[in-house]
Amino acid sequence: MKTQVAIIGAGPSGLLLGQLLHKAGIDNVILERHSPDYVLGRIRAGVLEQGVVDLLREAGVAERMDREGLVHEGIELACSGRRIRLDLKALSGGKTVMVYGQTEVTRDLMDARRASGAPIVYEAQNVRLSGLKDGMPHVTYEKDGQTHRLDCDYIAGCDGFHGVSRQSIPAEALSHYERVYPFGWLGLLSDTPPVHEELIYAHTDLGFVLCSQRSPTRSRYYLQVPLSDRVEDWSDERFWNELKRRLPGDVANRLVTGPSLEKSIAPLRSYVVEPMQYGRLFLVGDAAHIVPPTGAKGLNLAGSDVCYLYRILLKVYREGRTELLEKYSELALRRVWKGERFSWFMTNLLHDFEGSDAFDRRMQLADRDYYLDSEAGRVTIAENYVGLPYEEIA
Image (cartoon, rainbow, N blue to C red; front, side):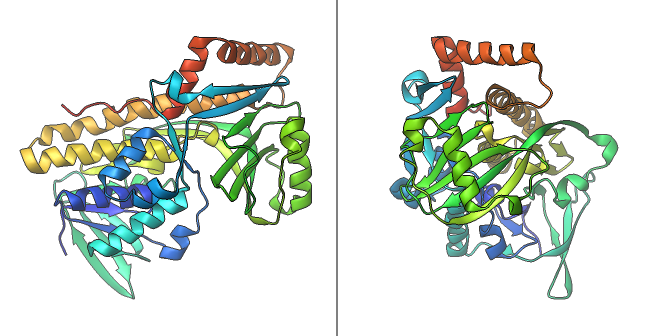
């Protein structure tokens, strides 16, 4: 089998890239090692930057998002006994964010792929990438006990941090940058109305808390917990009681509790690999970078990677601009590092760090006071939260 672009991974980034390429008449095949149900079972973030919202509309998969998604014009930060609303729309020149779960984005993209008839192979095992540097790339994989070969012009590695794509690049060709944080997020999903119409990020003496949502009837809450904690240690009752302890009193009084649909603990870390390309292989999303969820940047950075790679491939196939291929990593990494910086900044601003001394705590307090009391500080948070602009492909 032969195609123009082989896409490894059927998460939102691989499916979105495939949908955009298909609409542009560029053939592509998606290979996914898991089943569709497994892919849809991943519980992930739900805050979409303006740029990703626009990209989903361009891909023709935004009908349900525009009907059911929640446009948010602000967020709230609760710190030092104060609740401060950041008017994202006013502070960023009219931009907003969309609250729409990543699972729903994936579902919409899967439906579009199915309707298009474009090829996608689930449960593709033992995927191997070859010929990345010699101009003759191909992918081999096993399905139903048979080995298949897919020849292609380019490969997009959208298969996450543990996928085969980055591992197919020689170790000496890559540089890795990482920061591991000494705590995790305990998340609980419930069919209960959100405690507030907008997201609340809170710093307390008991640790960080985030009140998020997926819909007017489904809520997602997070607590900062030690890495030594296990999900089994946290009954629903214990979670709700701790959440109420950390919330401002008037917010806690409005909290509606209920049975958890899902509970998990996610460790926090920052990670970037450079470069994001090797020959005719291009890394996209979590295959190249991980961010702590504090800045709501994981899916959104993957979206900007997709945008850059898609627009470059469009010019390659329509205009013969093959020299642009060498610019992908540079373009993507400029925005990735800014997203990493914002996620690192928000994480440091709002969490308690074990071992921090009195000076560290006073500096953290000074940072919160400056960024929340200063117009320039609030603008900085807002413009990063709604998403920095994408660069043009010249």
